[in-house]
Image (cartoon, rainbow, N blue to C red; front, side, top):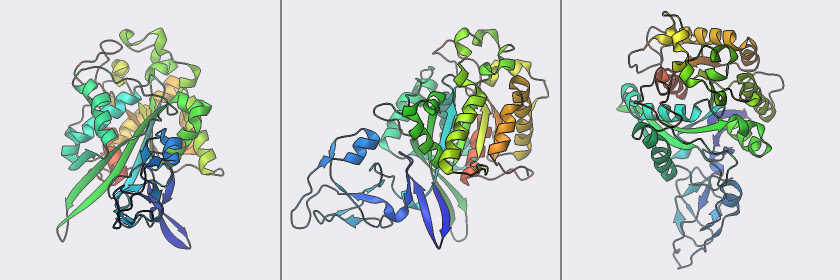
Amino acid sequence: MRWRVVIGLRSTQLGCPYCGATFAERDISFRCSGRPGPDGQRCDAQPDDARGRWLNDTRPLPPVFAADGRLPSSVCPGCGESTHVHVCPHCHRRLPGGFGRADHWPVVIVGSAQSGKTVLMTVLIHELSHRLGGAAGVAVRGLDDETLGAFHADYDHPLFDQYTLPKPSDPLASCPPRVPLVFELTRTSPGWPGRRQRRIIASFLDMNGSDLASPAGQAQAARYLTSARAIILVLDPLQLPGARGHARPEVVGPERAGTADDRPDVLLSQVTGLLVEALDSRGGRIRKPVAVVVAKLDAVEHTLAAASPLTVRPALRSRFDVRDGDAVHAQVQHLIDKWDGPQFNLNLRAYFTRYRYFGLSSLGQPPKDPVTVGVVVPHRVHDLALWLLREFGAAGLTKHARGRRS
């Protein structure tokens, strides 16, 4: 997270991609390299209480010390050896290289246990890393070993190579705690002199409605929601009363009805409540951009009119088309009113200043069975990805398009 706060002098606030805590750039800490200093003295490795408390990691490590985190390196006061290892001053997790000099965009994806949020996150990152990244001129790479290993093994490889759904995400309060996937997005554009680069650190974390409701998960959920710069709220049409009765029979079952806590209005109320309390908005509206996504459109697409913008298969684009996006926004808002009544839209408008509706199918078709899918052909996932790139400042609008700022 990176923004300007004016209280006398200007300072830059950052947010840890892993624990969500906020701090000034100069407050970034250093970890001793563990190598002997000039006089041969070495700092002993020891359990790190902060990592144990935040990450449930009690491995012995070289000590952490405070110094000016704006500097590329610092000298350990214990052994006198120089180190360039920057760590979060709260959880002591190693920060990505150049973290303080990049714009950090934490993205939180919230939905019920069966809404398809994990599949959406997987497809969204896959498309950014492949077709859409190439079209938009955005280079994407994982920034840490956990992201590089976990995203391939647990998300991308099962879905796109083995044609199986990713396993459901563990609760936020699991042991060890689940942390976001962290990527660097770089867009290079012609400039004078030379070329200009826009470098963004984007972190993605999906959470269940149960994380918002349980005492064990609420504190962590509130921390991540507060530090998020964009929120994606995923709605399952099979959990909307007016849509469920018209969905394809093969995708409807008693287990898909969900619980009272899975209702869209309950999810929105939980997110709103945690943000209002954490941000102390004092009656003001929340300024974070929110994407409300009706997922699994393939289950109800046959009920839509032939002229519906949700049935259109747009060509591959490099920028977000606001004219088309406005048509989708209006259609999805109408459908939510029709399927679930007006309260969801009224509450969204009452508490948030910037929001946009999307309708999409992450897979392009229903799963073959509870764990197996066919070839993944995403439908309108690029709309959401291009909206995010626009919010990140890594892509603009189509030349002919002007519309709501959301």
